[in-house]
Length: 176
Image (cartoon, rainbow, N blue to C red):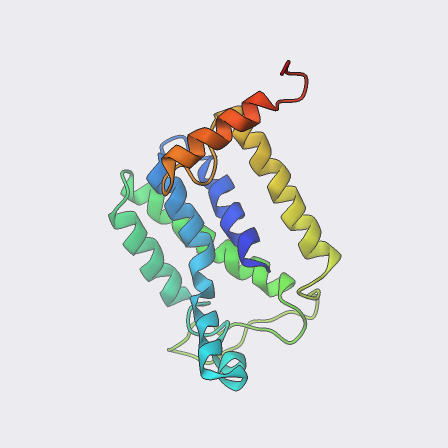
C-alpha cells in the first residue's frame, strides 16, 4: 500500500479518538506508517530490499515497541498505546492486500521466520489502492471542513491554519 495512504489512515483514525490532541493525531500518522522504515533496506540494493522490506518493521515486536514509544509521549497512555498498536496492525493488513502478489511479512520476527501472506493481494499500482487513496483524501477534506484542522496541525500549525482558512474561503456555496 502507498505510504501516503498509511499516513492519512492514521490521521483519520486519530480524529475518531476524542481524547487525542494534535500531538497524538500526529503520532497516529507515525504509528500507521513507520513500519515502512524497513523500506530503507533499498539503500543496500534491490536484493537487500526484497530480503528485508516487510520483515524488519512489519512484525509484532516492532508494533509493540512503536506503540509503547509513542504512548510514552502521549497524554492518555493506555488509550494511546492501544490505538497506536492497532494502527501498526492496520498497516500490516493494508500491506497484506495492497503490496502485490508474492509479498509477505514475518509477524514474529526475529523469534520466528513464519511468513504471513495471502493469495488475494492486488498489485501495488491497482485500482484498489488508488481508490483507497482517493477515498482517504476525500475523508481528509471532510475533516478539514468538519473539525477545522489538517494533518499538518502538529508539525506546521501556521500552515494548518492557513489551509483551513483557504478551504473555508473556497467552501462550496460560499460567497467570494
